[in-house]
Image 1 (cartoon, helix red, strand yellow):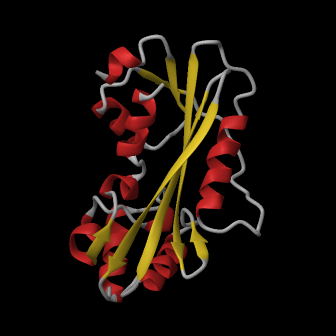
Image 2 (cartoon, rainbow, N blue to C red):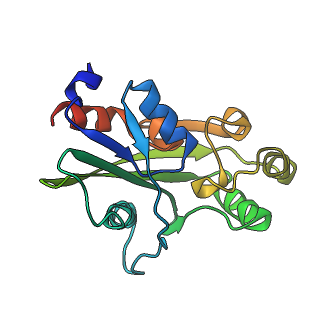
Length: 192
């Protein structure tokens, strides 16, 4: 269904995330992967969804020229905890600090997706509220040592061990926490 809708487009996913790539395969989208290095730096005054909107747009700007039938899709995810953005951890110590800070609390997982062609650009986003149980230091160390969550915002993957044992409640899209608000992206692509 979506495959036919996108027949006239050359869909480019600008993401190295294996999870986002799998979502595109699962949606039965023909796509190519193109990556451009950018520094993920945003103005300090931005908060919450404004950060991911800004960064997903910044990633799209790295592609200065597109062909007429190209449809570029970029995305960014952060964890928003008590007024602070948690991106990807720098190392095991950073990952521990993030997970310890989220232990026993609610946080928001915010993802923005930028769709860009030569004739339009649109940013969509989604917010999911996740509540962690109190995590013991041993549980946090076990997760970090065995799952190495250094490529994940907030130092965790909901689809991994920490999600199985540590999440008390989720309000909103599970897939958004994994890394893409698939339901919203599907609707936008069907509306093209």
